[in-house]
Length: 75
Image (tube, rainbow, N blue to C red; front, side):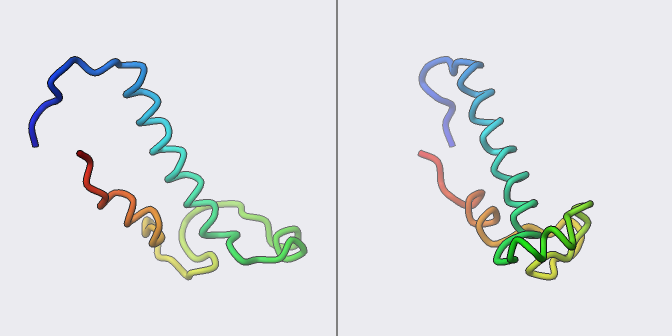
């Protein structure tokens, strides 16, 4: 992959990085609450992100959406 032809604005790069981190964090929380009814979440609040959740993930494992996002080619 070639470097961009022009200098990249650091503010834009910060926003891009922030959005990617936000997506990863949102996905991590979502894996624990996805498809759960509100009353279940009230009775069993998310207190840590060490695996399990709706999909029974192992510690450090990511869900399908995040995994596919990082495979997208950037051109």
